[in-house]
Length: 449
Image (cartoon, rainbow, N blue to C red; front, side, top):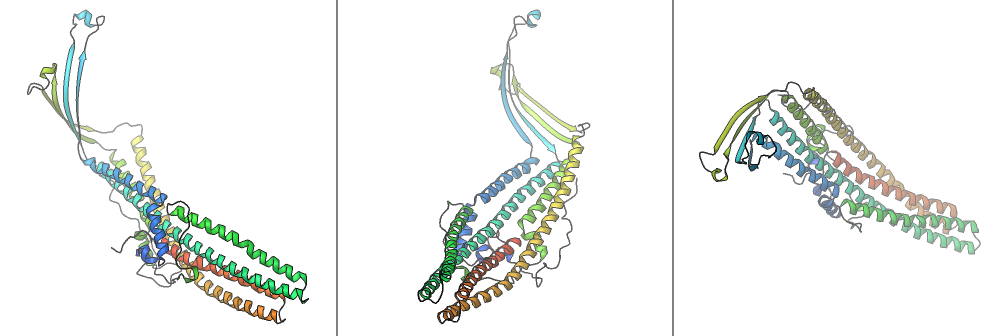
């Protein structure tokens, strides 16, 4: 009645903003076990997919919608009911039966079956079936969207954990270096070469590094707890694979064509299925305005005495009837419901268009971020290496009296900051890869088939 569904036209660009070329392949089609190389991370993601409670709720929603879809599919079948009843009626001594002189009890025994079928002339049942199917498929895509986000969240949390491990290791090494420098300055103080102020400044610098270590250890424990909860387990220690700076990064990842978002992004597909569901509901509401043809057949056994209840053919009865019902006056409810479903259809289409825009924007953001982080990591790595050499040189120069203690403290602090920043940039680089994978719709494909 309401016309067949057709996807609205959306002008998709030839390539993403931030992409250097229009790729035909996309990492979105890769299973996460192939996209990620760290076996420990893959194990964590497997555990999250199997045990995450949010994902389990989404999967149960699929089962619920599947049952609703099954009910809608049976709408074409007739309804059949059977029943039996027996009654005994005794007249009142003071009632109307006393005036007529009838004081006999009346017995009635019946067993009957009823068959009713509605002809789907205007497509109402068909529209309801399409709506239920779209709702079921939408819940499946929503669950896939939850999984893609879960995969990216586990990867991001894992990379953050590796970053904190690296920062803790860097801080401990710098604490040992600060202790060595403090001993050198104390020796020079004992020799009268520096004042007590030099000792105090190095002690303060050393304390600042030491203070950061317990906080990093706290952050590591909190991150491990968060990862455990994501995987559906009680908080516990998380096993690591390769350390942060040995975990490889990959740039220039193939993003595919923007049009592929319509098929690869589960949330975009869910938005389109929501549009299909609204379109089908509109069709069902329109069909409700037209006449309904119902065929009914009823038959069974009826008798006034129990002994005659099942005697045939004398106790047999049957009725066959057809009815056409045309709604005339429903206080405007039917037309109002139809107009409401049309509004819902428009809202669903707008939501679908918005989902496509947001998906394309997220991919573009991830591509630009990857390119930026690639350049930043090169510069940060060069800066950290330069300051590492400066630390070694400053120590030698200080021992020979050609550098002051202030220069030594300054370059050590700068080196510590540079390596902590480099660890953060490497973490961002790895997380940007996972975010691009999610933005393209990766994380729910289980195999290449």
